[in-house]
Image (cartoon, rainbow, N blue to C red; front, side):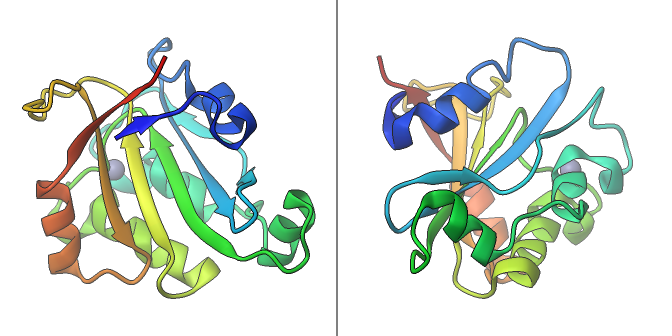
Length: 169
Ligand SMILES: [Zn+2]
């Protein structure tokens, strides 16, 4: 998958294109609304390292914060009171972890999305650092897709089935 720098008016590109420039691990999620406008769901989170405790990872901190926008607030920001969430694009320096089995971010984040926005929200998770996770498609950055209500086995399969992406020129 190639991600256009100009998609959604460049909103996501401007927010995350420097994710590998800093030593910190950064995380943010944008709701792409049905009118093709991307809105950041909440303030970006970051931490100095991913460490052993998954509860402190920026993934978990992002979805635990109290500043996440409601659907009504997303609709107001995208300029359409009737827009729905088409999908959510998550950008993180690293691929969601599988620490301690189902306690890792891979399995803990979709239920947090579900708690906020309900079932069947499509998620695309983009990582930005070359983690040596394959690259048979010649692209070091990885992404995976799942849903807010994906089962644990579906999430494990989505992680194993990660693919490559890059910014297009
Ligand atoms: Zn984690």
